[in-house]
Image 1 (tube, helix red, strand yellow):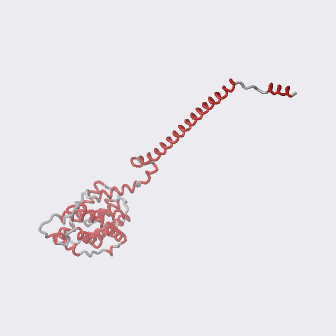
Image 2 (cartoon, one colour; image 1 turned 120 degrees about the vertical axis):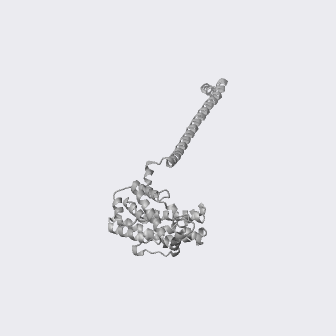
Length: 313
């Protein structure tokens, strides 16, 4: 039985030959190499896809960041176009910059408002003394008074009050302290009106001008034209005072003399004075008119008999 059992055990147990044993390891290594190659290829493809995805995302982000910047610099987006000035505001700014620029032909460069005599007399010797003189003229002299006349002439035209406009024009013409200052402001006023009528005519302008029987002085002329064109009063007044101060500084630069940088420093220093004077003039009545710059008025009187002169006032 044991022999039979042993015989059966030997008969039923599979016999592994040397050939089979040698074949099994060879198949396993081949499969491993195949699997490794597939893994490597798959990993390589995944890495390439990821790198391409990152590159595309980076390019898209760069284009998104750069293109709006370029378009903002050279050609604004339609949504940003509304940030600019409206049509009426742009026209008002353009006209004020034109009318009150040194290029507008009113002949302001030939007048000094008495500064020429003040320099010869030694009242103005440098930028500091010149700044003090201009501050007084602007805040307590002709600058403030001219601003008040401009405001009241503007409001009379705006309200259609011809009689009030006539009275303001007469008072402004009579308020000038000297013959040369009268020549200065009336000549500039006439030139301003004539040029505005010729190049910038509008409805109501001729009627407002016809109301004024007296010579139209410069601030009244600016008020009339600004109101006829419906330009807001406050920027009109600020632009006028800036033009007056700029002309004073231009005259001083030739008389003292001053360099261009010093002139710009003076203009910057007078910015708050211009703003404060404009605010006072906007709120002032005709009863608030008055000047305390006696030395400046005397300078305009003495200039009439000054021996050597570059300016007409």
